[in-house]
Length: 115
Image (cartoon, rainbow, N blue to C red):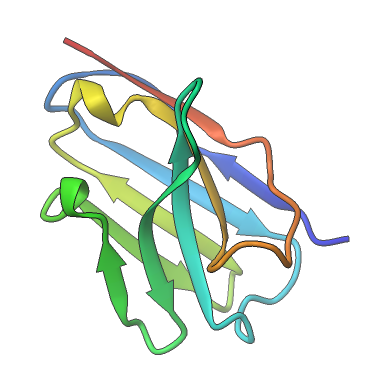
């Protein structure tokens, strides 16, 4: 069974940076699009950034200019560089295919931004 392992979260102050990584236990070269998602308690999981196999990228408006998604189809890894973090970025971050459904969700990685 395919597994997703997210890492890189932590506690950071407003304006700080974090780099999230997601390792997939199978080749992602054939996956049309991968994405990062986030979820806070009581709210629905939302997509944050999407990257297709041809490297077409889409960002949620609230993170445009601050977050950068990338994928490495050799190492089967998806990363999310997060700069200028805001308190409202606090959430558990997950990666998965886009749209999700073919791969079980991983445990995610917690990002907490303090003011």
